[in-house]
Structures are given as C-alpha cells and as structure tokens.
Length: 66
Image 1 (tube, rainbow, N blue to C red):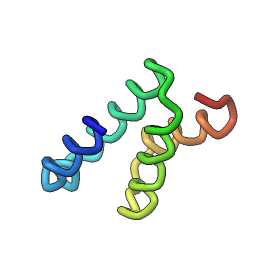
Image 2 (image 1 turned 45 degrees about the vertical axis):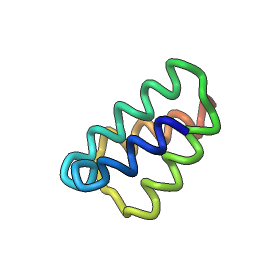
Image 3 (image 1 turned 30 degrees about the horizontal axis):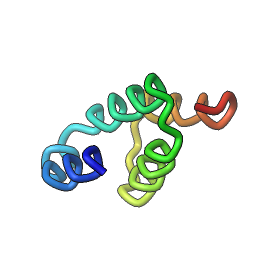
C-alpha cells in the first residue's frame, strides 16, 4: 500500500520520467513482491508507456516469473 500511495502522490513525476516505474518493477522483483508487479504492469499498460527497458523487464517477468 505504501508504494501505491507514493505512486499516487507523485503521478505527475512518473508521467515525465518512466524510468521511475522501471525501478519500482526492479525492486518489486528484488524483494519478491508479485502482487505489486501485477499492479505496476496494469498501471504501465493503462498509461500506454513505450520504453524499451520497461518492455524488456516486463518480457523477462512473463518468461521467468518474479
């Protein structure tokens, strides 16, 4: 819930810097938080973000899991 609250509070920044979502994904994987990964994947799809690093990381999650 803390991560979701931070993302909500800083949504303007996230829209300007998509790499912040990349690092959120990275740390969710690092700390083995699959529920948060699902939330971030849904958010990224809704925002229609096109970023090679994020796309690659999401592809790796699909192939290998969290």
